[in-house]
Each structure stands twice: as structure tokens, then as C-alpha cells.
Amino acid sequence: MEYLPAGFSGASGHEQAGRRSFVGTPASRDNGTESSDRPMPDATPSEEKPKPAPSSGTLGVLRVFGVPVRFHFTFVLLLIFLLFIGVGERQSGAMTALYVVALFASVLLHELGHTLVARQYGIRTTEIVMYPIGGVSRPERMPKGWEEFWIAISGPLVNGLIAAGLFAWLATQHQFVPVELLRDPTDANLAQRIATGNFLLFVFNLLPAYPMDGGRVLRSVLMLFKPEEQATRVAAGAGQILATMLGLYGLLYSNFIMVFVAMFIYIGASQEGAAMRGRLLTTGVPVRAAMITDFRTLTHGQSIRDAGNLLLATSQHDFPVVHGDQVLGLLTRAALVRAMLTDGPDAYVASAMDRAPRRVSADTPLSDVLQDLSGPRACALAMDGDRLVGLLTSENVSSFILLRQVAMQQQARAQAR
Ligand SMILES: [Zn+2]
Image (tube, rainbow, N blue to C red; front, side, top):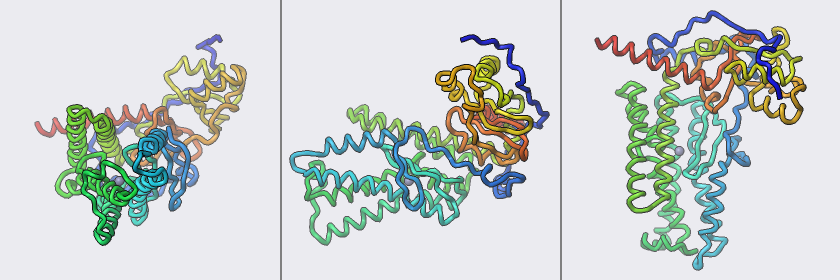
């Protein structure tokens, strides 16, 4: 295939003199709240609230209380693994299955605890994803202040209540067995194992470190007498320390499952810390301030070959497809490559483009769209009414956050002098 980087007639450059405001005072929390509650100007609801894409690597959907529950493929592998190793000489297959289903239900009920309390505050949950070390709920917006405390603590409390209920029932039945015997699963100690599992979920999730619920509880309590950024840093730091200790313990005692869990916690703590910093650094800043304004577009009559040329000639990965002033869709790099393979270079870009790309109003607070742009290669069209004014990608948002962080550090240093 031949590429002529000079031949992309019809592609137009957009440039707009926008005032960039990553330098300056961090937006106060009050401002952030106000701006995110403000109705968006000139945009239809369908433009503002695109259906969030399901998390990658998930299989199957189960709807509980209207919330889609998805299963990460590693979780499905774990279920199969548990069923295989669980079938021993002293436990029937049916009881093994029951045990695995009961633990799964406990984790799901934990997540539903978060979901239902969040609903009390008017926060919808867009999905629940089941991972090997637990479930993760994705709220539509981040909770604030005490909302975070109650939403976070509700999940572990569900497990605490299940454990307490089962233990109380076992006590009335005089069915307790010594804890050492629980290592040897039998049909008779099934209820006590489920109760112990829930007790462990209760304790583990309340560890005061990110990404556990206890980390969020700690953060919301610390925020009573510390700025949000510091509170976040403490919770994330605690998560990393905990993960390091667990990892060392696991290595010393050759407990590799513990090393695995420690890795999950470490990564989770770093990600949560970064996400929270990103949210803080973008609060009160509109999309307009961070979007790419110097970009190229394709017209609907251009070919996949033209798009390929443009991909090579620029650093852009996603190209809006336009007809006059009207935006018809978005051609991503992945779609371009796919079209090149299946339809060939002479196909029209219009046949390969995404016809319903994510659109955000340029006046939307950046912090509101961060979550939608968290995936790699995510791209949204920034609109001013019906007019395309910019592109917002995960890469340029992270550049913006980085610049703003540096600017704020310099400012803090100048003030300290
Ligand atoms: Zn939880």
C-alpha cells in the first residue's frame, strides 16, 4: 500500500484562540460544586449523557436493581478454579457449588449496599464489575463529603451483618467448630465457612487504605480537618504501604495468592490516588480549557486511503468526519485499520466511522467527563451547540493535568517564599 502524506485534499485545520487556564489558583471546592450542578447550555440530553461504555475485558450482564453487573474474565476463571479445587473427598459437589455461589452473592450484596445508599443521594451506579478480589461499582458522579463516608461504609456493613446473622444462628444451633477445622471443608461446616468469609470481607474492606472502602472512609474523615488533596494522599499512601507489607509477607511465607492480592492493592491505590488528583486538578475547569483546538477533519466523501495519509502526517489518532459545518461521526484509528483490512483503501470513511461518538459541551466541567475519558484511546468531540470546536482525548487531558499540577506547585513555592 502506498501513502502520499501530501495528498489529503479537503482536510481542514481548525484553530481557535482559546484562553488556557491551567495556570492559576486551584478552583475552590465550592466553585466546583456550583459549576457541576449548573445545567449545560445548548445541548440535548442525549448529547450530554452518552451511555457509558462497559469496562473492557468483561463478559455477560446480569441486571440487579436495574444496575448492570458484569464479570471480568479473570473473575470467571477464578470461579472455575474454585469449583475445581473445592471438590474434595469430604465435601459434595453440590455443597461446593453452594459455597462458591454464597461467597459470590456476598460480594454482590456488598456492592448493592454501596449502590442502594448511593441512590439515596441521587447517585446512579452505571455498572458493577466483578473482579477476583471483589466487586467495583462505578458511580455516575463522585460522592462528596459525608455521602462518600456512608456509601463507602455500607458495603462492608452488609458483610458484617451477614456474618453476625449467621454466627448468631450457629450459636443457637450449637454448631460451632474450631477455626482450624474450617481449613478442611465439609458439608457440615458450610454455614460457618460462609459466615467466616463474610467476616473476612468485612475486616478486609474496612482496612483504612485505598482502594479498600476503608480508605474512602478514612479520606472522608480526614477531610474534616485536612484539605482534600492531603486526605487523598494519606489514603493512597496507606494503600501502598499496606500492599508492600502484604507483598513482603507473602514472599517470605511463599503465599503467592497474597503477593497477587498485594499487587492488586498497590495498583489500585496508585490509580485511585491519580484519579482523585486528576479530579481535584480539573474541578471548576471547563472542557474548553483542555481540548485540542488544532486538529484535522475528514469529509464524508474521502476514502480510507486519505484517512491513512492523514494518520501518518499528523499525530492525531481520531478524525471527526464532517459535511460542511455538520459533524457526521468520528473515525478512530482502530476503525480505520479495520476498514483498511476488510473494505480496502478505496472505501469511504463514512462507512467505517462511529456515527454516535461521545459529544460533550465545551462548557462542561472537565471533572465531569474525566471518568468517560479514563480508557486508553478514548476520544470525545467538544461541541459549542452544533459546532465542533475541539477534541478531547485521554492523552491531552493527562497533559493538561500534568501542566496544571506543575503550575500549582510553582505557585505554592512562590507563595512560600
Ligand atoms: Zn466496597
